[in-house]
Image (cartoon, rainbow, N blue to C red):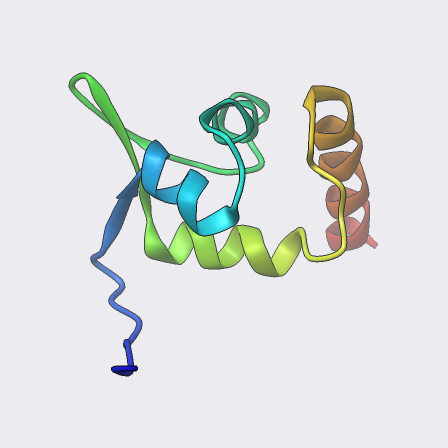
Length: 84
């Protein structure tokens, strides 16, 4: 398997992120709507920078973000950790 390197300019579509995170598009859209994942609207599409996806994975490691309520609860928990 060929090694891949972090490219800070790489962006992913919602479908790409869903595939990488092994979830559905609906989950990624929920994360975007709740603000726990930030995207860039580019006309009809939304893209997520690779650095933002890495931040999301690091900050929300161990959190349950499988639906809207749990994503909002996770956001509160993460915000509480960063403010403490």
